Length: 128
Image 1: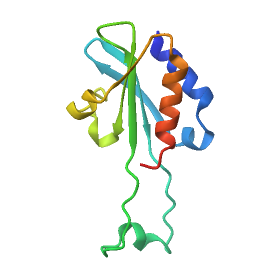
Image 2: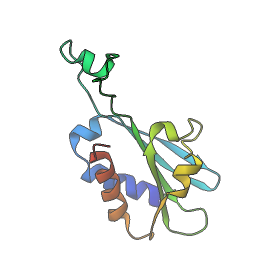
Image 3: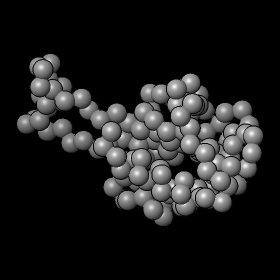
Image 4: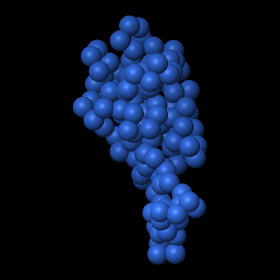
């Protein structure tokens, strides 16, 4: 199964800090079955910076939104399809992407497992 190979490659490439804050779940959407990775950036909120994140002032900073990627073998070919975005843009039932995320999907040839894994690692490493 291609998705299993991609997951194994991600596991080799991902930093321990990011991996510590990832959850691996099943992904199922019709004939597409694979894995979904949920990542949240660990933000330590101390008394000193509590107001920074939760204050109602104009200087408050929003907490980073959790990210999600779902990937599998494409339903219409042997290629790998990858959906990525904010966690809130995926359905909780099967981790299915929203219409917006569905249309920005990335497709990789079936033998480009390393490229898919690198894309996921880079996506989680980005600040936004």
